[in-house]
Length: 111
Image (cartoon, rainbow, N blue to C red):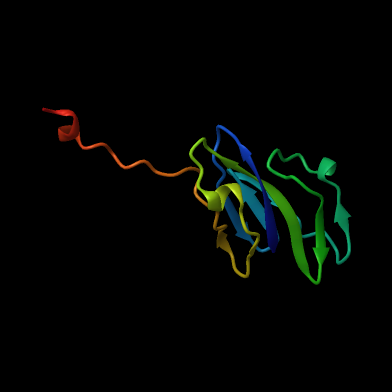
């Protein structure tokens, strides 16, 4: 499965998992098993707010683009994401939603 990303500022982070031709996005499963070689499933035919493209099967692989949500402090790797090729099942490696801020030292502000 080949996934490209379209980054967008969004209040909700994305959690994605793959199991064969089934992609689960924030708990909702999308089964692309019936998509034959060369088929194109239009974006409008899939009730998924995270999908940013048509879904195709080319060279035996599902190909699609997902919206990659990010917060205000998203790192460069999230704002300019690289596509991923998934060869196995499990969690889809996504760039971080935003940069984790280190907790401020409580003693820092004391005089």
